[in-house]
Image (cartoon, rainbow, N blue to C red; front, top):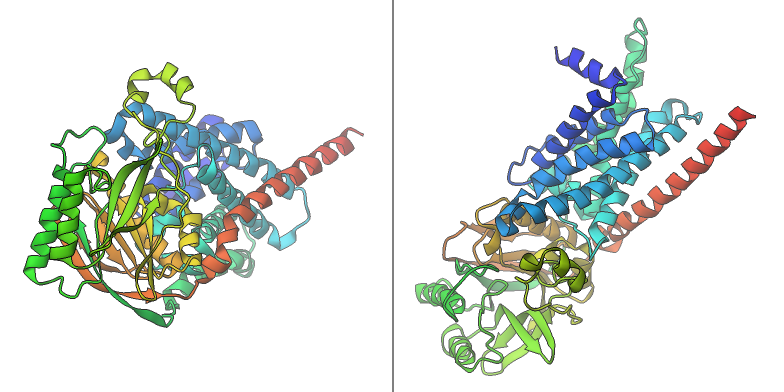
Length: 529
């Protein structure tokens, strides 16, 4: 029965027969991400979408890609509806679906061109490799455009909870995306090019050998490979505090109550004796709702706590004005010295922390845009803090955890561990917190650094450089975690070389598309002649 259905969809020329394949493919892709975490979904999704766009031209492939892309992003980003309702969710999903659609239009054109070449037994491998490169190039575009892009739903991140994530240590998240698409497309191409009946078992084995070899290598290497443990450059005893504070955009809290909640949990932790000889305490993004830099009462609260109770550095989230600029930042508050360093978020979230082209969008949705009263400015500082002699930690604020180049910059600037400080209050008990935890684990693997991810409401966790969970805190619970984390100074292959794969895939995709257009045009002219 399954084989008959698969044969029908893989052989039918009807556009409308392909639409269900595209939609199911997009939904299957989305199902592989946390919190659904159906691992085979990533492979099945690409397999189905490749079947859908076989043998057609750009425009039809574009429309099928649009169906697949909206299904994919619509499900992965469903948590956005808890923030501002369905309109922003629909707009963002549709915009990303357009990029998705363009990429599959490009795939259709390149595929048609490669079919005209005499590639012999390597044809499927070459086509699948090209499909993987174009898809990864599309992820580059989505991760950078418009307004800084949305690097949230890259297919490589979907494997954060299993051993395949090890690939990211060597070839970055982008390289893992390329490989997932490559092996999935290769299987689809194999199904689309069966040998004639009566070909014999030997020929069939030969036909399937490249595909099976690629799948075997893809799964076996990370299963057997143990990520190396570089020489540690010391250890750091860190406490991370989840205040269970509703610090969301639409929350109405008594002034200072969010800071008080984090103080309460922190003091309880210290009183328990679990935080003796602490080197650093970390609080999440927006854990200070009134600015301790400029508000005297909050300044006193933080100073007394750090000097008399904690007696160690405190790294916490704050929002502050410096001149006319408004920043989402992380402050380092030291005993006696007070504020000694800070990091201003380099990549504020569009339509969350600032409004690009405010006057234009204000005309379209004044009520919604009016909710964002102040536009936050992008920071320029390096995000690396000196905690004690020869110990440096880096900070990423919330959405910045998804941005590769910011993680690379922290490592390049000497960060030996990474703190990811986030406020997930707006998204309730949705998939957002779980997805961000998966991204944090991948960031640990890619950078080779222990990651301490702390949220106002969760999911918070401490993740080793190989992605394992040291501790996690339950969501919407006031809690804290303490761990001695290893410090690393070595650079992973992903940081050294893998960081160029995604941009390289974009250049590769553009070059392939241009070559395909020229090649098909020449072939068409020859036929007419």
